[in-house]
View 1 (cartoon, helix red, strand yellow):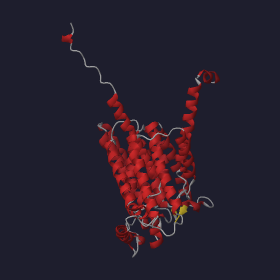
View 2 (tube, helix red, strand yellow):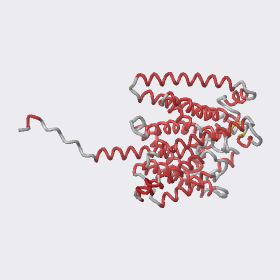
View 3 (cartoon, helix red, strand yellow):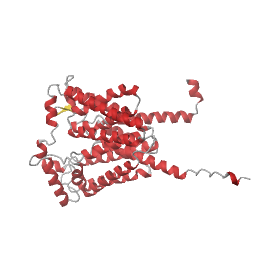
View 4 (tube, one colour):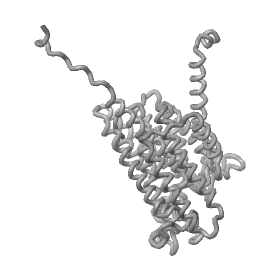
Length: 423
């Protein structure tokens, strides 16, 4: 081994070492994203250092990913302008600092995946590991598996290593969808290895008792299977997708029946499964606040300042669009809306193209659609995984841009000379 290492050029050894260090750093950063009990979280502190070091050694932002950077920065400028409307800043500077940091994480992930597409697989593996561990914590907390386990619950719902079960549940959707993709497309021999972590993550989503997470996972799973069905021209593969989908639904129904027999689960499920909760339809409930908030937005084009809405009405906006209008003003709202529509349109255009990174784009894309849909009923402003999804999608957009550019610059094949012209 030492003889082989001695024969390798020093430059090659250094390149391998740097690749190992950078890959490990990205893996650890993604792993930490599953443990956000307070702000700033360990993920935040680690990623600040990682982005700073990477920037010093040549972080390159693709031209194709420039809209991501511009629109996120513009959105945060809107937040800074909205802050000028506040009489008491309180913790607003820290809140906006976290917002700007998360924007840079999206740009960072878009940049590194555009340069090193191999990082996609590493990122997804790290995400799955993190999701399984935080799911186990949430499940253990829900069942009081050990003394003090209740710290991983909130409102008698599994929250894992998160502040809120309504964030914990949606965080688990992408790794769950990725494992489902591998089940639908991978070899039969690997199915048991994939089924175990998928069941753990699915259980985490269920015991979060988050209606949004349930809906997100269901919608994302339908979009994934539909996309796979449309993408493949193979009748056998389409049949496999159909059979596997039916089997998965049957297994899910059986698991639900068994779980609902556990003490207290059926009551909680029945309560949470209702479309409307008391806090939705109360006099100043969620839906009433929507109407009031959008009227206020017409009177305050610069916004009223981050987190101020909650101090007035006792509850925050619980709607990403209203959140943008109140906390970031019309400038932030237009920027986020433009970014969302641009991401959906640009991602859809390349969604089913046969590329090495296409599976990761597909999983990230359907999860992003689910998160945006959920954002209509809850704030997703500081959800770290949403910014990761943005980065993964825009990284694929940048890769496709570079791929098409290389095709245009490639020399055209020489035209064949007719045999009759040869003398």
